[in-house]
Amino acid sequence: MEFFKANLIPAEIIVQLLAFMIVFFTLRKLAWKPILDSLEARRAKIRQEFESIEAAKREIEALKTEYAARLAKIEEEARSKVQEAVEEGRKISRDIQEKARAEAQAVFEKTQQNLDIEISKAQMVLKKSVVELSLQVAEKVLNEHLTDTKQQEKIEKIIAGIEEGATLS
Image 1 (cartoon, rainbow, N blue to C red):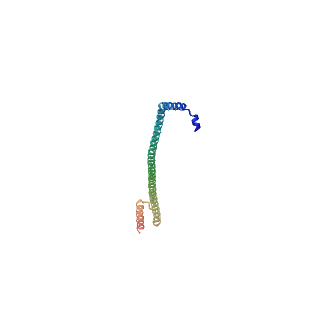
Image 2: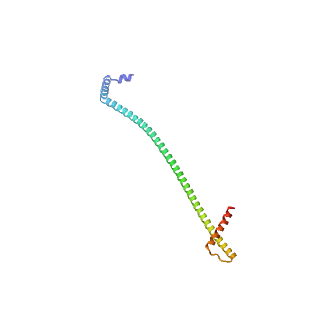
Image 3: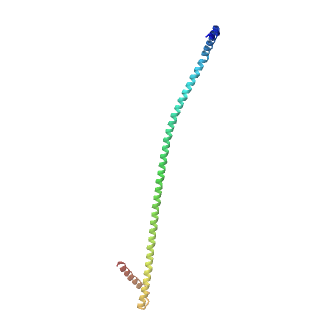
């Protein structure tokens, strides 16, 4: 304590105290308010940035929800289009199958007609051959040549009657 008593000069303390008070009140008057205003402005800016961050988060969540809904809608449309394409493919397949069946049926019917025509031709050729053969036999039997068309028609009727009798039994 001795040190303090020896080194403390009351006039210096008062001058220093007075200088401190002048600096303090001057700073308070000139710098304190701007410093407080600056701190308050910074506080307001930080608060505003937090609010804008929160708003941005809410907006991002809303966009995320909207994008999820859009994505679901797009996926549903894609599924729908795929389903439509599958149905269209099945329809085309059925059409092709029906067309092929119709063509096969037409070919079968045409072939059947051609076969019937060929059978009719073969029967006519066979009849002609039988008539000629019968005429030759009759000529030999009668030993004369039959050229009369009425006789030929009569023989054809007889053969036709024989054929009908053969088909009936």
